[in-house]
Image (tube, rainbow, N blue to C red; front, side, top):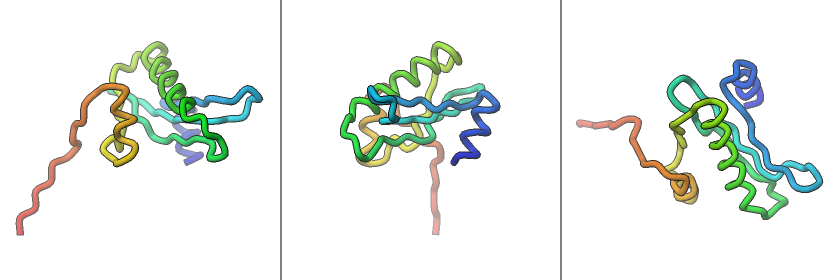
Length: 107
């Protein structure tokens, strides 16, 4: 993950957005990558020793603001928005579910 994130950052195609507590310790971080079409949410995690769930929401909102303002991103792929327990949070930022692939199996 480190080399992927570094490679994307070095090519100005990705960014880590972090929210820190008052002492400067990271509380929550989200990583987005982008191309000419849209941004992609790749990773995110909070400090397991903290219980400031609003920091995650703030990290996402600030990432979205920066992507729109400084990178002219108008679309975000929330990869994994259909996963239970996390999908509702991602969908709360707006948007719609679109399937990538439709598979059909015939026996």
